[in-house]
Image 1 (tube, rainbow, N blue to C red):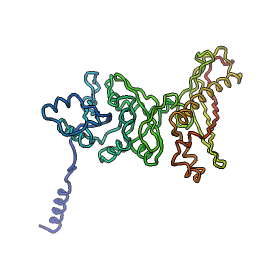
Image 2 (cartoon, rainbow, N blue to C red):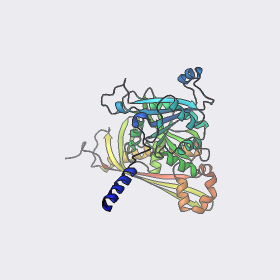
Image 3 (cartoon, one colour):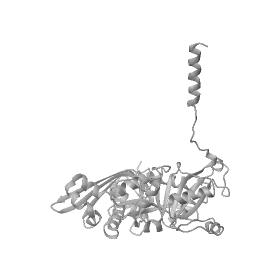
Image 4 (cartoon, helix red, strand yellow):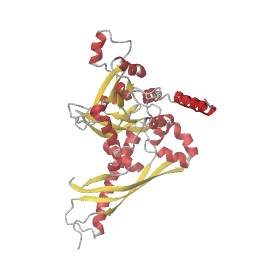
Length: 395
């Protein structure tokens, strides 16, 4: 055999040895694919009680209950899924060490596969009593958990948000709703595990979108408030308070303002197309104050007034003033909530003070929430209607 043939044969053999394939691959049919989980205060499930009576338990305290939402690929891929044949299954277990009782699933069914997980929902009672940092950190340590997973806070039990009356996978429904910020001023920008950990690391007070659930239906309902250093839930913002915060910070891609007349009858609907907000800190000696300029351009999408002539500027101006008055009402609500009700600053005033007056910020940052509760805040709202349809226009 020639040297060339020997060399060729040797190279072929070496190539075959290198083609070992994915040695650590996992068969999808042998895993439970988790898309989301709900974390509640401990409450041992009835199923566990029955198994424990037959020697199926281990030494633990039921401090936390986790409900994993697992997709059923065959049903999820089918277009014929019905209410009786859902494309998901919820699996709940209770315990005290998250990773231990997560592995407990392997004693009952297929192992959990978390690398496609999209959502974490924490129950109200749990995050009122336990540090959110501790809860998230245990997930953050797991190399299978994605840092991009969205975080929500349930008003009530988190596991209720993972139920649905329709064949839609509940976690997918929550993710879809979170993307509707361009339609409403009552939806916060999404918070991921990574975002929450960053807020905690900078010792900031912060908000997380809250969700309400009942009998298979869900709705985004205001925001959960977490106070500086404590990292525990101290209360919720209502939908109107959250709307005021959105206008105050300018963080909205769309939404409407509904106004009423003096008799509380429907008046006009203003739909924003653009929104800008500028928080301006002012320092005079030891005195700190803020002024916020809010500007928006939008459309007049509903008008219940009679005999309106849009060629008369007074009609448009009255509509603009009515919408500005309603926005101001929402802003007053959120300022009162931040400064008087919760003594917490979650609108970014501290960030602007740090940028423009870093030395002043160094003096007040340790107790910023309390400092902010005493600081005067003024604002101006300017709305401009640039589109009002064709109703009753002159020919």
